[in-house]
Each structure stands twice: as structure tokens, then as C-alpha cells.
Length: 400
Ligand code: PMT
Image 1: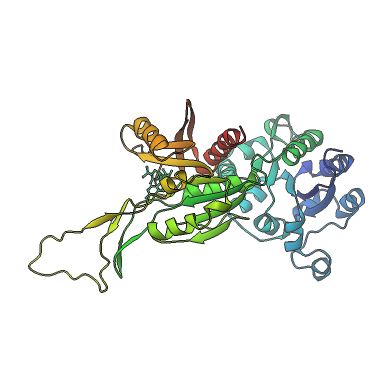
Image 2 (image 1 turned 90 degrees about the vertical axis):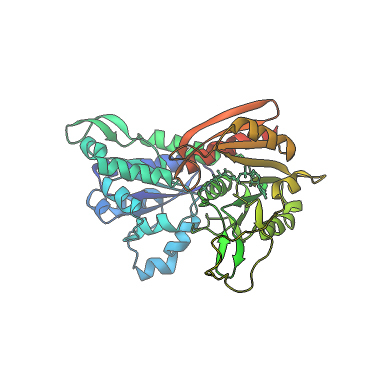
């Protein structure tokens, strides 16, 4: 009973492989899972709701606007109920709608509303699977953390041979067991994390800042949450949505970020400094907008040093396990190692920000992580994938 007490929401979309869903429900239940089924409109053309109701032991949901279903377990409640959402089969059409973020029927709405991991078992004709549009949708979904299980390759119902067969129900059950059984890497760990840029005011309408988008830090917040951590994200001004389950504290300047971190650091086990904090701020903030005058071709700004937040964390006598970043354009390794030692860090992620297509404000990144006596390269990947690898690496050293 490897899925005892686990709640699996099985989504069934329209495709010939839908006939295997009844078998899948039975095999999930064999392992002790409680299974609720949600069907798309077209799935009902391939298998009846009555069949899936009989094998799951619960009414099958398929309408977003059904008052009696909403009076039972409403769609938001259903989204929150699940430990895992598995969509099998996942058709090309369903994946396209999910990639577009549509909430046009119950199943796509649930996928947007659920805090649980979502896994797709794609099933379709091999040409449809290999089509550039489908592949682009899969890439988009993977970059958002959707799990892709399969497809298998082989002979298809339509007579074609190639990739696009839904994984066997027993294989899908095994994936569910692995996904849900694994002890989360950072279960119960309290993580405090900084992300994004800071803004250092010059006058009421101007500031000094940098190109950090917050994408790397937000991806780390999400990956850490997935790994079971309690995450508090101290964020500079960015335009990103807060990852599900993460507590966010908004700040603007380095001094505010410093204050937000130092007032919370004693409660955390792990600190990660991913923010691009301004090293200096204007010595004076003009009360009124600084005016351009005809006789001044130059103005001079006096800057003073900001507090070094991560160095302040590293200097604490009972400091948390502390991980920094080093954004460098030259001598990356040397500067990173210097910061590791000078700021009393446990690990540092060196980020070569001189390279095209990675680092500041890019969707992808690559890092080399250093610690006392060791290093590990994390090759170029989208920031969420990279963040998951980074969290796994940090967890290994934190637990050591
Ligand atoms: O936000 P994105 O667009 O996704 O880009 C990601 C990133 C490039 C910003 C990120 O991957 C990264 O490299 N962040 C660190 C940026 C930085 O300011 O590095 P640094 O080498 O200047 O600082 C070293 C460390 O000290 C960092 O952990 C930094 O958070 C910390 N620091 C720096 C100055 C300061 N006053 N206080 C600090 O805590």
C-alpha cells in the first residue's frame, strides 16, 4: 500500500487511451490511494463517467458550472484536496490549453488552482506529438514545473509507429509512488531567501538599480517549497507572481532588505542570498525632483556603502546555513571563492553574468557552486530546473 492516505486527482482528456483510465484507477486504489476523477468534455466520447465512477467509488466531475457538484466538493476545494494531479491521457489539445493558461473547463481550471504537483501522461498520434506546436507547449509546461511522464514509443491505435503512447497504468502508478513517497529534501526546514534588485532613491522620482528580474530567486523559492521547506522570500521590486505556499515580504532598498532579513534570520535554518543588492546608495536623497540647470553639464553623486546583508548573516554567532551568489563578469571563480571566505558562507553559487542568454533577466542560467574543498557545475538550464538542482545540492550539504 505505497499510496495509503494519498489523494490523487485523475484528469482524463479525450483520446483513445482513455479506455486505460479505468484500469489506472483500479491500480492506484490497489496501492491505497483515494482517487477522484475529472473528465474533459471530449473524454466522455471515449469512456463513460459511469465506468470511472464505478471503479473510483466517487461521482465523476466534468462541469465547471454544475451547482450540485459545487455543493458537494467545489472545484477550488477539489484543487486543494489533491496531493497529486495526474492527467492520463493528456491530449495535445489539453496540453495546448494548459500551456496557454486557459480555464475553459473544469480540468484546466483545476490545474491552475491546485497547489499540488501536476503530472501529465501524454498520449496522441506520433505526428501530433512531434509537431513543433506540441513540442513548444511541452517545453512551456516543463518550464513551469509540470511533470511529464512519457510518452512511450511503439505501435499506435491508428496504425502508426512512433512516440505518443500513454505509459502503461502500472508504470504510472510507480511514478505516483515515487513522486509522493519520497521524503522531501528540505522537509520542515525554514528558509529565508532574498531575490530581485534593490532600488536606491536619488529623489522622489529616480533611483539607482540593476537588471535583476527576480526570476532566479523566485525559482529557488518554488523549488525549495516543492522540497518541503517553509519559505520566506524577501523580495525587491519585481513583476513576478509569488510561488504557491511561499510567504513574501516586499522591500525596495538595500537598507529595507537588510532590516527585513535581520529581523527574521534568527528563526531560519537556511539563508540564501540571491538578490542583486546595490552596494552603494546616494548619500543624500533630494526631497524634490533634481532639476536640470543650464549651467551644469555634469553633476556629481556622492554614494555611501550599503550594509552587506549576507555578510551580516554570516557574522552571526548562531548563523543559519548560508548560501550566497556571486554575479561576476571576470575572474568568476576567484571572486566567488573570495566571497565564500570573506562573508563566512557555507556555499556560493558563482554566476558568470557576462554570457549571452543567462544571468540577469534571462530565462536560463548556469552556475558553479563552491564550498570549502569542493565544487559542482550546474549546466545551462531554465531557471526552475536549475533551481531544483541547486536545492538538491544545498540539501545534501545542509543535511551532512
Ligand atoms: O534576478 P534574475 O534576473 O533572475 O538574475 C539572477 C541573478 C543574476 C541576480 C542571480 O543569479 C545572482 O547572481 N545574484 C547575486 C547578485 C549579486 O549582487 O551578486 P554580488 O556578487 O554583488 O553579491 C554577492 C552576494 O552578496 C550575493 O549573495 C548578494 O545577495 C549578497 N549581497 C551583496 C551586496 C549587499 N549589500 N548585500 C548582500 O547581501
